[in-house]
Length: 188
Image (tube, rainbow, N blue to C red; front, side, top):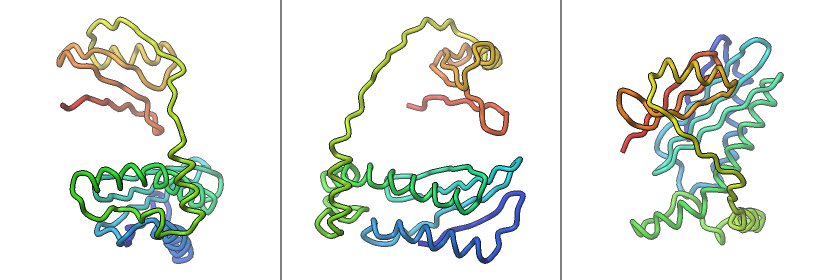
């Protein structure tokens, strides 16, 4: 797989580029064939923090991970570990879906085709249960986006779910890492 590696507010040295490519090459063992699209890697430095963001577009799946730490090399290691966990989690689900709908070869290698360690990891992920431990219900009168941001800041949360007064749909506003705000609209 090829990667577009770029730096924000920093220069990507050849040593750093080699390290990123070497670490991301570990992920290729999970795929039947190398993905046809290029992955994007962004390395950035902000206020003493080194961030790495990786986006891997695959067939029917988009893997994305971001990590920050004081050391750029540690951030790279952490983001690759996070991507490996995502791949293992989606591995059986994606292969099952592709086999049922298209009957084609899956994106990820089959359990028997890989090492015993990988097969064991897949079985452990299959046993993972997602349990909802808390449910909240609330009445949200329709409001403007600006009012929702003010409400979010007032209660001190990083996101706020509200009924948009213009569209009459449920939206989410959230605070981004750079201090700006984002809006999530449902598209049906």
